[in-house]
Length: 297
Image 1 (cartoon, rainbow, N blue to C red):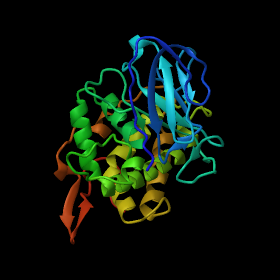
Image 2: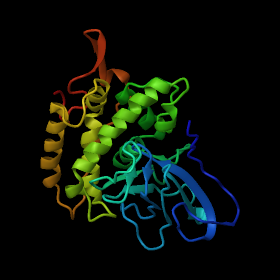
Image 3: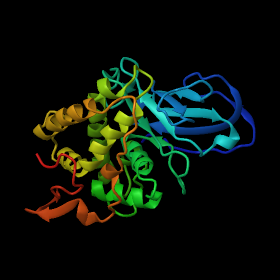
């Protein structure tokens, strides 16, 4: 089993070379892993101005074959800013499909400044959605956001929602749950990639407003996405095709030069009953559970 832990290492001062060849500078190493499946040759950086693009002075690195990265950051910046990973078309390899570079660019990230509590440095579609919940709804706490996300996915209490689901799928108490989470993450990443032409500004930056609009649609439809994955349906299912088309229409209508409030797409609903019901011998998404997304097939 690959034993890859997303870790935050705090030291005083030292010299370290970031994964993938970033230059050595004085600072504190912050390490973790990027995944849909483990992503090789993804660009990772500390996004100090929260604009989803690598700017001058922001520590950066490239992931290795196991998706691992290490950023060397100023000690006073540790834990203050989001970490962004960009899976770059023609460069990044998803180890779910070894040896093949991805065809479309998409962005992943972790929560940023102002988050209380411990947040994993495992960057995935799951951590990305958690960040956008908190960004769009400042009144939501980290505990509330993780509870809501767990309920949307139908995952058990006690499971680490921000854990490395690739490693967790190999063994352990929540092996089956992590396998299911990996399948959901694959579909989330597929949806993100499908909107690349509308969300990305070139290959290394994203339009923040459209990005949040896209994540709002994914958030509102997450139980349906989870159900789609659990039933073995892929990106070509009627539901996923309809969702991609609706997202494309909605995102195309969002101006790239203005800010839009998407808090209604990330409402603070933490009850399990909002998202699922038990019908016909199985758990099924509750139609209209978030009240604004594209629900049902």
